[in-house]
Image 1 (tube, rainbow, N blue to C red):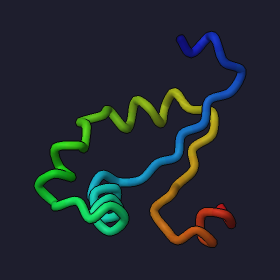
Image 2 (image 1 turned 180 degrees about the vertical axis):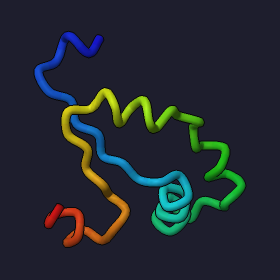
Image 3 (image 1 turned 45 degrees about the vertical axis):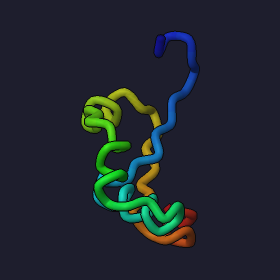
Image 4 (image 1 turned 30 degrees about the vertical axis):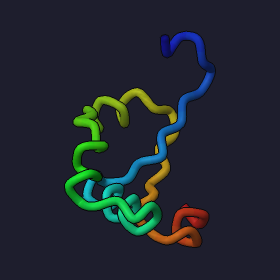
Length: 65
């Protein structure tokens, strides 16, 4: 499917931080957050992306890139 696109972008965040943010934003319990988390192959996704945006920090840090 990648051949259908000129450019692919990935916004990356570590699973632990993703769950923490989900819990803070939606009031989801940690146990529920772990159920939502999918065991994705992050390294494969990163290798396929043309642009990778690290979303680990704050919004201003992400904007600065």
